[in-house]
Amino acid sequence: MQSSFSKVEAISWTGTQLKLLDQQVLPSQIHYVLCSTAEDVAKAIQQMVVRGAPAIGISAAYGAVLAATEGQSISSLMAMLDMLSAARPTAVNLRWAIERMRKLTNEHVSSSAEEQVTASLKNKLMAEAVAIHQEDVSANQIMGQYGKKAILASSSAGHKLSVMTHCNAGALATGGYGTALGVIRALAETNELDKVWVNETRPWLQGARLTAWELTQENIPFVVGVDGAAAYHMTTNKIDWVIVGADRITANGDTANKIGTYGLALLAHHHGCKFMVVAPSSTVDMSLASGEEIEIECRGRNELIMLGDKMLAPENTSVSNPVFDVTPASLINMIVTERGVIENPTQAKMQQLFC
Ligand SMILES: CSC[C@H]1O[C@H](OP(=O)(O)O)[C@H](O)[C@@H]1O
Image: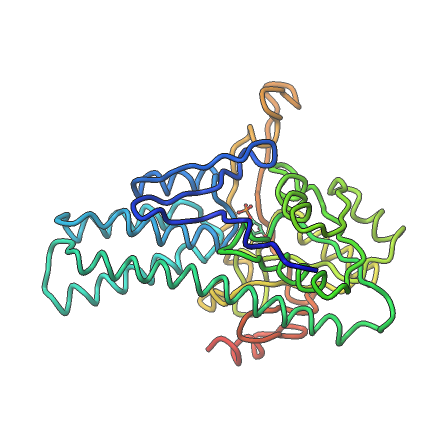
């Protein structure tokens, strides 16, 4: 199967602006948002024009380039880096990318004693943003192959694989190719895949809107189900693997991902499906001992009780809308990163790969 993932260009740099494929309106509209300032980028991240842990890190890096207006003070550039870093709290890739931009700025300032942003600093920040973007694409391609190899090595030969995924961890959520969807693409490229069970992923519908759109572009067979049907699908069909992305992986292998992932891991454990997390090393946060320390983003009530302009619940309904949960390492069979694959993750195994 010919891969056409390069057709999905969710993030691009025009030379002066950041161009984002608007994920709020896909798949019914192909609409691009142009960001001219760091504030525009922070707003696009908050409103989920761009989303997915690696994609928001890459966007923030380009946002830092937009923040670096020549002649402006270094202290106001640093304040804009803080603003970008705070746009969403859970995915550590955002903070990681901004830390790379901050480090470069500090190095430049200490070597040149400049108090203003210069053309030379702006060029360095541009090169760093492009590097962050390109590193992510190549990490995804490596993880695609590692994940596929690990799955084939642990599966009995002779049947095509059925996998389930949650949310969207594809080209849209990354610099390109995808993390969980990268492994799925890699399996499809060599005809090892029967079909993908896609959970719709309430409330924002990343599965039904975005993953289904990406799989359609690639002619990869899939079925969308409501999140509540996952247990039913696991009992009525042979699902070999649940494959998901991640927003933050802590030092013991606990993993924050889209709300509902923890429940899926419990179901997978009960039904004998293997559970794989696929994420670049930029998603690993060795500064946190366990998932209990991860800040979980809670988003607004309208995402849950409104569908377009239609109310789904009585007006004054109180709502809880955490958008991530934490899957304990004990429920994860494999964590796939571009540095290697960890089976049955533990703190010792994480340390070996990431310290
Ligand atoms: C490739 S990681 C994608 C990751 O991002 C999602 O969250 P959101 O759509 O809220 O940015 C989700 O947790 C996915 O697994």
